Amino acid sequence: MKLPGLICDLDQVDTNAADMVARANGTPIRLASKSIRIPELLRYVLDKPGFSGILAYSLAEAIDLVRDGISNDILVAYPGTDRASFAALAADDTLRRAITIMIDSPDHLGFLPTKTTGSAPFRICIDVDASWKPLPGIHIGTRRSPIYRPRHAARVAKQVRARPDTALVGIMMYEGHIAGVPDSSWAIRLMKRRARRALAGRRARVVQAVSAGGQLEFVNGGGTGSLESTCAEDVVTEAGAGSGIIMPALFDDYDCLRDSPAGPALWFELPVVRTPAKNIITVAGGGRIASGTAHPNRLPLPPDGLRYLCTEGAGEVQTLLKGTAAQDYQLGDAVRFRHAKAGEGAEHANQVTVVRGGTVVDRWPTYRGLGRCYL
Image (cartoon, rainbow, N blue to C red; front, side, top):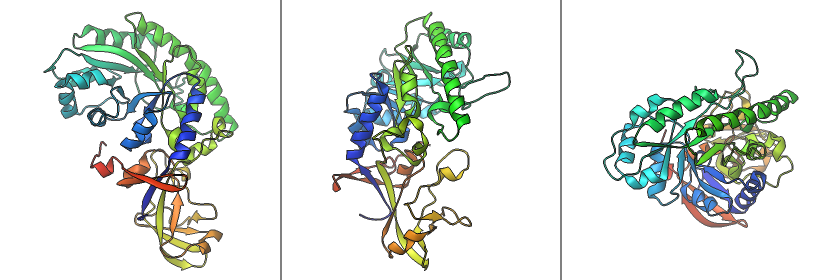
């Protein structure tokens, strides 16, 4: 395989997908494209029972996925202001039937142009903050939507329903402080237990308040790290998740996955280009640092027996690795890494080499390989 390279093990993808479906316990999983970014892998997983629709991260991306025939049921997980994409949506009745856009403020509706074809309305989902506020002034969770209380959600829903060109079809409440945080301490575990209980009650009240003005098609919640608890809530009709397909390094520290058959399904390989010392090797590239708060757990995970030099870290065009395993590598050998988060690794490769049973069976283009850059 040409180096640098990206590798996907379909056998492990099958195992991971089955584990996610089992953990969801009958609740459909909307596949998060940001955790994949490989169209043919999205198609492959969506063909499996238990998965239904895509949770996209960009309207332009959603439009491409509909036109590619990947899915005709796409929820864009984040509000956007891309007027060119909104114009494309307004001009295509088929796209409006397939794509649901996200808002967390009535101001987002101002970006919707006048429809130019067909009768299908703009499908709208309201993003409601799922974070935990145990005491005044304390906010635990991601800073997403400004909508928090049921009555606030109901007010925004009323404004959406008042427009003749929009249809309110869903609510999204993503519990990033539960699904996206490893179980790294007793304090984190305690926070998650209490936050789950608080969220379940508030989510039910939000759904009740919004549904009083009209029936919803779906209530979306979750993430790979919270499938069991999210899907146990009666009001949740679907879970958004995708990282569990790839199982990046950050998920090694989740209690819900410790005894799971799920495991790494995607790696990248970099070639050894120097051997500056007996216990040090240098690989080309390597600075594929994951998004989020700067922390060592955002670095790609090298193989056992190798570690980063504390004085250099993951480099821009080359990376030094030190350890007892260094002597096992020669110039040109491949060193296999796991990315800290899912999806972002695909932004560094034009294609992924697909293997099954240790044999190469295909090569699939990534978004980058198709010339697509959405952010």
